[in-house]
Image (cartoon, rainbow, N blue to C red; front, side, top):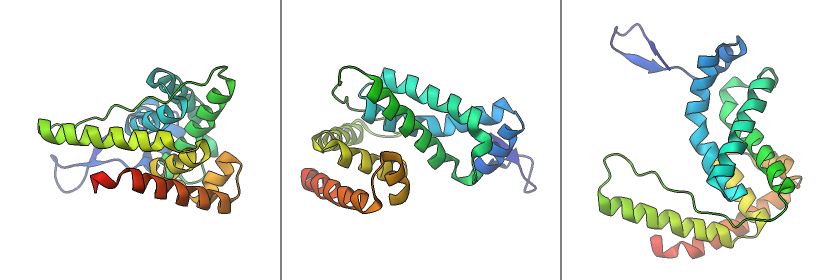
Length: 190
């Protein structure tokens, strides 16, 4: 969703998330749809790492957006809607995993190559992402979830702690161990 500014009729400026949230609060489904388009890819990638399946991730993310639409009036800072969406998605993913009777191994997330990338660049990027996925899969569950919430969702230590029911000091330690392990496993890509 874009808006024409005073610079000229042909110049378009993207509408901020905060404005889209305000419009959504006024029951504008197109504004909320734009928020979904902007943030769904990151949410899907993050949730897929937790639930282990892209198909299940789509269902979880859809549920997260339904929850978000219903609770939009509880969002305190409209400019922080991405982090808020990620917290909801994390909660929905955690609930999904708890209800699932049999654990499923994590799949790798398919990388999306930039349109102008050469085949060599795409192959290298794909190999790097596969190596990162293997490194993440090798982490203990708490370390992996802390890393994904921090690096994928951009949540603070306190927010991660609230989401996972851990003290911030435990989150900090888990992140440090996760980063060390990932750095060692990704050494060949430096």
